[in-house]
Length: 106
Image 1 (cartoon, rainbow, N blue to C red):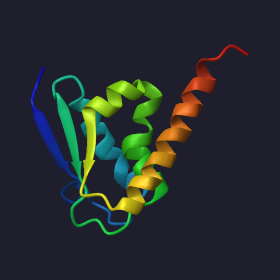
Image 2: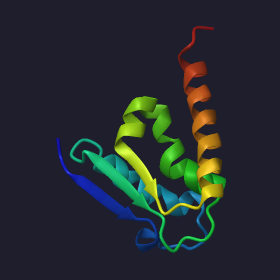
Image 3: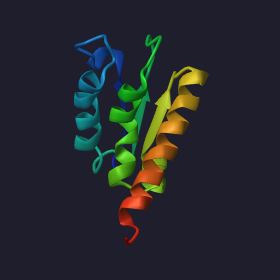
């Protein structure tokens, strides 16, 4: 299956606010390459600060549609600050809990 592609986050930003709206086109690009790419690297070079909503829109929402294993195999954030990786971990845990609650019978 496919090759590794790299999405340069900074190069794909039209809005430097790093908002959910600014992140949405990047997530759409990830989803457009989901089937054909073996691995998708998200390069956060030259990004000094990311917000919860920005990371959630790009990566967190993927956990609502794909299994944890699928996302972990496919997506790799690179050049992301340690503190932001911790933040991302919290977002992922929250989305995984949300997905589990959605599939549990009432």
